[in-house]
Image (cartoon, rainbow, N blue to C red; front, side, top):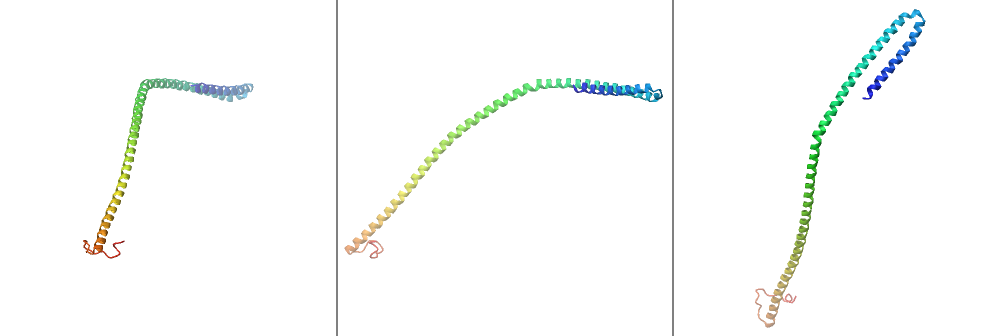
Length: 184
């Protein structure tokens, strides 16, 4: 509100400057009696300026009073808002803090459960890889065993064919072995 007193002071200083200039002219006119028309005109100008200054001061006083009333209303509204909103804001912040704490605790718990589940899953995957490796080795051994059985069966057939040749009797197999093939 310090703007209005300064403004009034400026207006008063300006009016005073004009009045002093007018007094200087007045002194010149009083010294010369032929200038009475100019003197009358200056007096009318001084009266008009005084009236303008008075109206300006009244306008400033009414605006200052209106602004003071507005400032009082704003202060009252701010106080009411603080009384109504601040307690609710504190409650909401407390609720939000509780919710965030619960959420963070849930995330930590979920993270631990996920880590435990991940560890169990990795253990199961390792066991599954071991079992697949064992199965592959067993299948390899079974393949070798089948190859060995087939080789033994061919060897038995070859031995029977050789005996049959040595004894001079025909082999029990339906097809005759070709000489040289049986020894191979």
